[in-house]
Length: 69
Image (cartoon, rainbow, N blue to C red; front, side, top):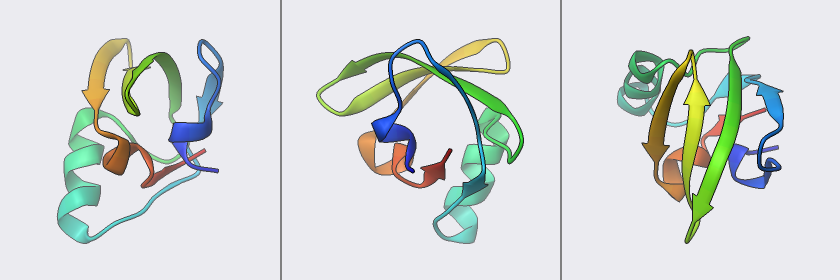
């Protein structure tokens, strides 16, 4: 399921990253890698603030839909 459907505060494991090569590279540079842990901290209008690798990152709804957990 996409990251946009994750419950707030629940730790999830990233299964795969979708999108074109540029999008995948950008997300990997932010710390979104398969097997990594990600927690949704807050959701505002579909955009997410997530905790990944000990850092808080804001991502758009479109980007979050490409991250499968």
